[in-house]
Image 1 (cartoon, rainbow, N blue to C red):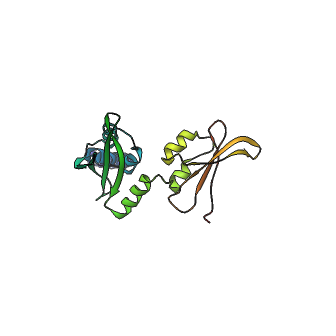
Image 2 (cartoon, rainbow, N blue to C red; image 1 turned 45 degrees about the vertical axis):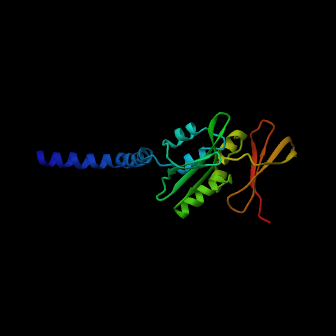
Image 3 (cartoon, rainbow, N blue to C red; image 1 turned 60 degrees about the vertical axis):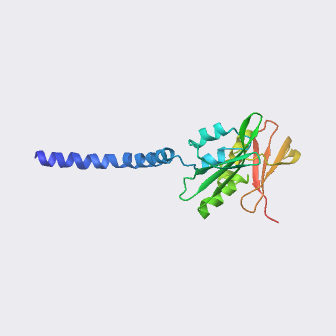
Length: 194
């Protein structure tokens, strides 16, 4: 009877522990990336031109390694989290500090494409889907990682003062987001490629 109770308790404990173990595995995977000091695609997207080197290192959670120096530019390399990728960041001295002047992801072909898209300021489909009606323009620009270009201003569906901005897509259909005077999203659309 005691053996049956112990086996049942152990088996029941395993059943209840399984979802927690799965969540723990997911959390431990992200902690593992942080512990290893590699740069995720999200971290890569967060660093921008003109950012101080110290801030880049706080975002990357690693100082990387010195790669080269020349013509006033210092290059540091960082290990990327997708296997086999490397991130190179160029810094120039401006306004009394080393600041990011360029960035590049290389290595694994699939990951390199994602890093390149992030670097060149184009809008992915996933980023486009994240933008919702009523969202602030500043938040849209943080999601897109680009301010786009002014397209037009005027009446739209009877609403005065609507401003439209065009954003370069990573695919082939340009993106337009219209904002009300309050700088909130009025609507968004993908223009058919011509």
